[in-house]
Each structure stands twice: as structure tokens, then as C-alpha cells.
Length: 475
Image 1 (cartoon, rainbow, N blue to C red):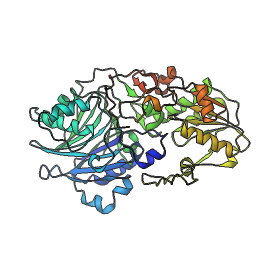
Image 2: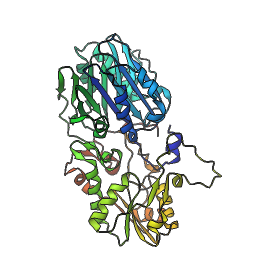
Image 3: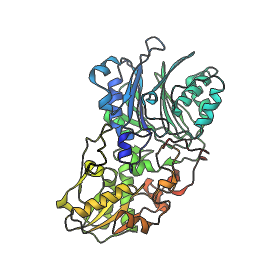
Image 4: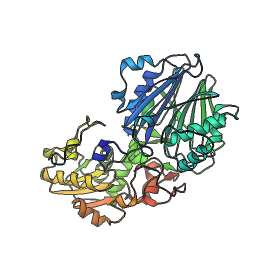
């Protein structure tokens, strides 16, 4: 079930979540730093958020947490953060792709069991979550949420009963998990990070003074003035404690399949993922578009936010001037109220408005990151022409969406994808554009420096992991 906002702007894609963990070896409180880290990761999830902390020198099992529905600055306030005393903790921002959007499913999850306490936050989707859940239910497990994160937590807790260490329990659990997961786990004395063997979702390690940090993106490290150490490798388990960084690469033998859409859309342009600048990836996407789909035009504009950098690349390659044609309302958040059907206000115009002076009387190249159902693209093209653009040439910095995603991206089922049953020419007519060009899937590797270890299943239908027999995504 989606939030009211995501239903309202149904063309937008969402990544399931962002994770942030911190361990201050000097004993300082980490809640405020986790807050700022989550703030930097807000783009990865805008439905709910949470922080859980504990004191490594305090009594085992004592965890303080605050979670809620809404944006980071809606859920957390100075008084509440002050009460979250602890030098080790985990934070999470969420957009639901599996499990309902409600308070029971807000992360991090806190699990109390015979060996102590686990705090866990997860980014991604398991394709075998339902099977694992059913197996555990038949052996007595009682689930309190509908998210696959709880399945992971229970697996780790069960493995810990016979494993010598928490990180060994994580490794044993990972052998049973299929799909996408970047996980941050806090045990009473350790901060552990794990990334699935395909590396679908990013996870990075940082350090600030005598504190270790795990986060979804490097922009979150920048937000707390931390130094980037390195990426967690696909299949790697890292354990951070007073002895430094310890690594287990036993499961690092699979060919990586990093989500290519992280570079096209999800990640912030100031982040680096697996050594690649997201900004440079989007510049390259724009340049490729200009090479493959040139246009006679007067100005190149991007649809905020992720279309902007690709538009700059198109401009640089084509020599057509780059301009800012859209004014974005930055205050449209999760609680935005959908107008009644009788209201004349357009949902797109509430979020974006065209600056008439920029496009009036001009032939415009409009660069966006994707077309999902086509409804928003049609509205934006119409807005540009109503503002006086004489032509609108649409360029998309990704290939056509043809298949759903099962690894943490809410790409809809095939029947909802405009490209699944329509040709490019048909889509062009449907959205009212004068021409339409997509990024060629054969050139996706150029976005990440020639690396071929990526997943493009939503474009190609080639899934690195066999998709589930039933649709588990809750879309």
C-alpha cells in the first residue's frame, strides 16, 4: 500500500529505503549524527523513519528508540533526540515496496532474544521471504510485521543460538537469503554490515574521529563530516568494534549485479557508489543521448531532480544551451493533501511549474530519468507547450521499462508499464512530444566506467536471481 503522495504522483519510482549505523568507541551519543545521516538519505525513503540506540557499557538489552510515519524532520525533534542516549545505533528511512505502509513496519527492528538484543535495518527485497516466513511460522515463530526485514532478523537470531559470534550468525543466515539486502545490525558490542553477494544495493564504510559508520551512500558520510573508507563488497560481512574493521569475504564469489538505476535515479548526484561518481554517470547518460538522439533545438532542460545532470550532459555534448525551466516546490512532503477530483489544480503543477520566460518561443529538449506509466510525462510536455514552447523533444536517460523489479524498486507490473505494450513512436504520440529518444541498453555499462557487473532486469528481463512465483512487492 502506497502513501497518499506516491499514489498522487504515480509516475515516480521509489527505492525501498536508506540505512545508517554508527558506533562511537569513545562513548559519545550517536543519535544526533544518525539523524543528520538519515536527513541526507531522505531521498531513499519518505514514508517512515526510525532510530534505535544502546550503550555498549550499559546493561545488555536496554535499547532506546524512536520511530514514526513521516519525514525525518517530522518524526524527530531536539527533545526526543536528547533522550536517545547511547554510543551505538542504527537508523532507517523507508518507502514500502513490500509490507504495508504503517507504524508496525517502521524500522529499525529491535529483537530481544536469549543471546541479547539485535537492532537491524535493511535495504532491499528478498525474493524468498514468503517461503522463509512460512517455514519459521511452522516451527513456532510469531511475526509482528509484514516486512521481510523481520524474516532476516529472526534468521540471524536463530543462527546466533549455535554460532560463536554475531557475525558468524549473519553469515549463516545469508546462506538462506535470496535477493537484495544491505543490512546494518547492532549487537550489544558490535556494529555489523552485510551486503548480498550480488551487491544490488550500496553500502559504504566511514570513520569520524574514533567512530565507525555504515551508510547507504557517501553523501550521508559527508553530512556528518566523516571520512569515506571504502565500499562494502558484494557478499562481504564487516564487523566494526574497538579492534577496528574485520571482514569476512567467504560469500564474495558471485558476479556482482549492482542496480544500474541507483546511478540513473536513486542515489544523490554527490554520492559515489562502488567507486563511481553518480554525477559523472548522469553526465555520461546525457552525452550518450545527445549522440544517439540529437535534436534541432534552442535549449536543453532537465526535469528535477535526477533529470538535471543528464540534461547538462546532453547540453555539453550537443552544444545546445542548458537552461532551468522548472521551479520545483521543495515542500511537497508525505503529508501533501490530494485535491478533490473536482479541483482544477494539477498534481504535477503543484510540484513543478514552468518558467515561461525560459521556454517561450523555443524548441526544447526535455531530459528526464524514466517514463513509467506515461501520465506525468504527458502532463509536463503539455505544460511546456502551454508555456509557449514551440517543440518539445523528450529524451530519457534510461532504456524503456519493460519488466517489474523484485529487488527493492517499485517498478510496476508489466500491464502498467507504458513501454511494455507500446512502441517508442506510439509513446511519443501518447505523451504529446515532437520526438522521443531513450538511452540504449547496450550502452548502460558506459555509465559506470565500462563495468558489466550490474543488474538491468527492469529493462532487459534478465534477472540475476530467479523472480518469485508470486508478486511479493505489494504494489
